[in-house]
Amino acid sequence: MGALENLVLVPCDRDVEVKASKHRRSNITSIGKASIDPNLWAIQEGFIGEVTMMCINGEVVVDNNMFSPLALINTYAYHEVIYGPKPWGMPPDHPQSREPLKLPLPVEDLISGKRVTLYTNFMVERLDQATNIAYDIWLTQAPRFHGGPKVGDVELMVWIYRGSSSEWLPSPAGKKVGEVNIPTYVEGNVSNIGWDVWYHPSVPWGGWSYLAFVSTKPSTDVAIELTEFLKHVEVLLGHEKTNKLHINNIEIGTEVFVYKPGSAGIQWRLKKFYIVVAKPSKDIEELLINVATI
Image (cartoon, rainbow, N blue to C red; front, side, top):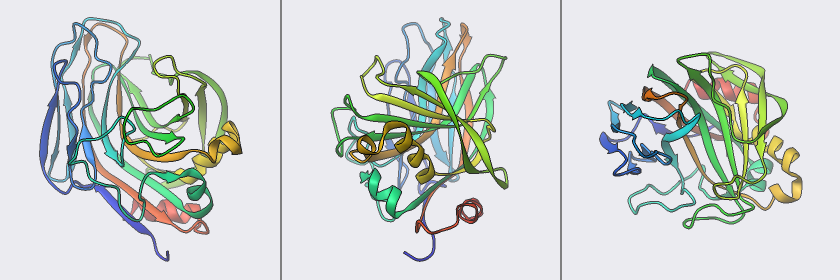
């Protein structure tokens, strides 16, 4: 592998429009090399409204007009772009992952043999309550194509942004267990920024482990080097456990949080989502800058 190998997932390859509501919580639809899903996975009784998610002029656009009768202090949705197979299963028209990053892939192979960089450029245009922009990456003990994650699997989230219409800010599941510094591209510059680390050993809604990195310099224009995060996962979980895991898929999206009754929606557009693969010898700072200027 010589030069950078690119997967351009957004701009989309085709225009689509899908909707979700309490009557249809998920609506996974191909956009070319990936799929989109409005994904109202935790919507509660009494919510009204719907979410429209589309690809138009190459951009992924979300228009969420939900109304909540509750103060959940929690998330009810994850509007997402999906690359690779989610462990719950995917519809037949979901695109297969492809070179240069075919998934599932053993974590050990990625740590030792590849640099995988993820770049996204978002615009949050309306926010009624609170949200994040976060990668959701399923690390499973074996390639998992259906049945959902199991005890011993790991949900890895990387929160590149969080915002709110008030002083209240959302936090990940579990407890904060530390801080790490990782080279990160943010709005034109690469620096060794801080990430808060949150961990839950066994979430009550499924039993898998949950691990989240939350940026101390939140932004909507960010490139991260996934391999560096996985090295920190290895430190936290141990070499033996980490080496048994596979990267099942990579998702990027927004969790939508509710902390008061009332309008609970969001509007955003995703202009770019790239996955770039390089040799492990590639300089991180150079790689991050190059990825963001593709």
